[in-house]
Structures are given as structure tokens and as C-alpha cells.
Amino acid sequence: MNLNDLSNISDNFKTTQKMPALFLGHGSPMNAIEENIFVQGFRNISKEIPKPNAIICISAHWFTDGTFVTAMELPKTIHDFGGFPQALFDVQYPAKGNPELAKETAELLSPVLVEEDHNWGLDHGAWSVLRHLYPDADIPVIQLSIDYTKPPQYHFDLAKKLSKLREKGILIIGSGNIVHNLRLIDWKNIDTVGAGWDWAIEAREKTNNWLLDDDFQKLIDYQKQGSFLQQAVPTPDHFLPLIYNLGLKEKSEELSLFNDSLIGGSLSMTSLRIG
Image 1 (spheres, rainbow, N blue to C red):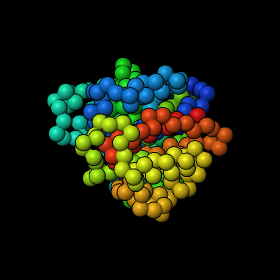
Image 2 (image 1 turned 135 degrees about the vertical axis):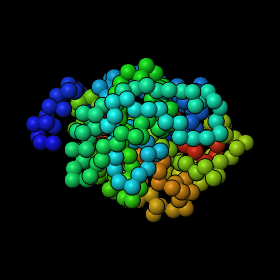
Image 3 (image 1 turned 90 degrees about the horizontal axis):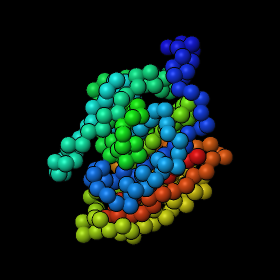
């Protein structure tokens, strides 16, 4: 792809005021079909931001060796879970893809090799929240995978290259959970908003403070911050989508929290808006 091609692709999207960026704590797949304060929060945030021209989603559930971007015209709805009611498997989110945006995204991330993917689709980290933000599925969506071979600093730096797309009306969403330890769920309080183990409460408080103080290096170096955060983030998959959003933030931009609650002892639904 040469520069003229890149310009032509960008011209498909009119220049806009810089779109906000979102990190969404997606929690249980059941949030896709249940009514609760968190899905209300998703719907509310969509009313507060301009309607995007397209969406790029970085989901905890597309964790790959290397970096990939969905490039099909019609991405399938992936039901990447088990043991849930049939009603959840019946959900379809028929948003179109956008091969041109996929190509531009790959070009922007050069010299990192980003391979176009025609097999994945939209996993539940994407559609379980998007169906509340944009229930008509009328906005094109592509997904960018997370390379599990790379450290957090790499992902933070990679995200910075995507920033110019925000000026073309592209909404970039990271979807995961800051506190996410499925092995230590308090099943008696799985639906109790505010229920958290001591270490989860500490993790929420400290990560929130670092977020609001723009102290992102502590979050990038989360593995060095103590046992409370090691318990909160036993694996990086749900945490790294947050790092992508932090990489998009300009110093002058405001960061605000919503859906900021623990649930089930070891999960946080904390979400944030940048810009």
C-alpha cells in the first residue's frame, strides 16, 4: 500500500472532531442478554459520544501469536463460551466488517506485521457490549488481536499509532476487565454489586487512582505492583485491552470512569472514557 492508497482509504471517512476512546469491562457473557446497571452504563455512554463511522475493538478473547485484523465483509458472531443458556447462543450481531479500514489499520501499525484475517469474526468481548451500545448493528466493526508474545509496553506503544483514526470518526474500544480472576469468584455474591475480596478492593482503588492521575507506567508495569494486583490480573488477556486505550490518550484529554464496581468478589466492571 502506498501513501496515495492510504489517503484514499482515509477519505472514506470524513474528518471529525476526535472521537473518544472506550475501555469496557465486559464481565460475564450473560451481560449480553441481561438487564442490569452495567448494560445501562453501556447504553448511556453511547448516548454521550458522537455516532462513529466505524469501530475497532481490541478484545480480551482474541489472544494470538502475532497481530491480526479482521478483514472480511461480513464477520460472523462467535459464541466462544460454554455452559450458558441457549438464548445466549441464539444472539447474532450482524454488523458489517470494513476491509478498507482493516488495510489502513495494518498500514498504520507498520513495521509491525499485521496479517489480515478472514476466519475470526466478532467474539463475545466485542458483541456482548456492542449490542447495548449500538443495538441496530449499523456501524462497521473490525477486531484487532492481542499478540500474547509481547509485553505491556509494546501494546501501549502500538496503540499510539492508531490515534489518527480517532480523527476520522473511528471509535476504538478495548474490552476486558481490570480485575479478572475466575478461579477466585465468590459464587454466593456473583450478582452482588460491590462484592469484592480485600485484594480486589485494593486493586480497584489503586488502579483507579493511577488511571485518574495519568500514572500509566504503574499500570504498564502491573506485574511489579504487588500481590494484590497479581491476584487481580493472573493472566494478561483481560488487562491488555486497557493498555491499548491508555496508549491512545493525549495529555490534554480527560479520563473518566463509569460502571465502576466490583462484583462476585474477583471481577471489576470498571470502564473508562477518554476524551
